[in-house]
Image 1: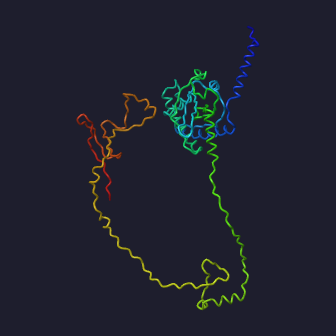
Image 2: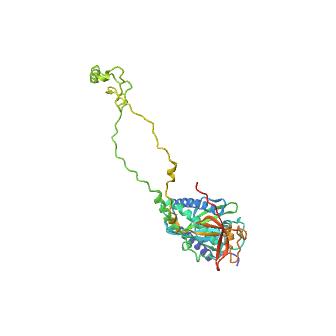
Image 3: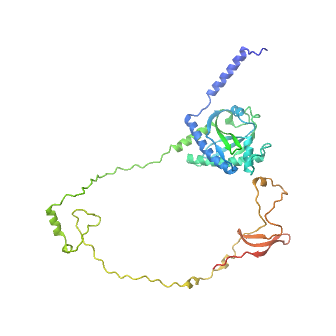
Length: 398
């Protein structure tokens, strides 16, 4: 062999390339409006999820603007780290379908270590069930808050089932077997740039089936295009009011004389001060009237009955017998301590937990959660008991 291809081999390669191109051109695609809507929804929902992740890891979390693309399973295999963690998210209310989140193995180790109180440096070893359980809970809270954001956008309740996390070795699934059905063809890939403090600088991917993406866009358009009904107002006959002249025209002399004849004699007495009619203002030609004469009123200082301090003591005694049969919960507290999640997960039979109380020190007796006495532990016929040694003093009512 001289390394040259025969004509038959060249034709076979060309035919294969043409077949791939024709297959790609016939695949499903989203419109520009659908891609923009999916990007906007993902941007808002992941922004809320980043806030939730911050509360879990106590590190600054930044998830950048998403990039919406089309992809195949071969694209994921060739471009992503191996192995990685697939997180299945199923919607049980509001939306019909599912999507997949993909996280890198190292990112999962850092996030779970931070959740357990570590500093994010414990990334040695393979992923265990503990890692998958912790990242599943983190994604449950993150995507739960993201579903709440989607609910406000779609104006309907959207809820998810608890996500399931699994380690996927892309080398073992390079042929696309044993994967979700929608991953065997074209699907929608939404990529995010994920940063967690100075520990994670990676890519987070979310994979959508085309049907789910179109349904999400349809509901988003229906919710955003709804406009409130504005009631139509009936036309109102408006009257044009002409401004009055500041200097009214003088009244005819005959009209003045007629008004003077209509004034009662008591209003013509010296010292009478005319006032206009109420609600008429200083209208020209208004008939004046005489203010009513006020009558003398007998005003006296108010007198209160003497305050008798003994009246407050004339209360019948309470019948406390009515409360004697009320059951109360009595609790004996040996001591307390604080443990991190990591230490609690390491508990095993035989683990010794040190309390904040010395041996032989009196223990606390609580009634309905309130500290009332101190005592010591005794044994009464193969059962533990408590001998009260001290009663706390209650404040006396003055």
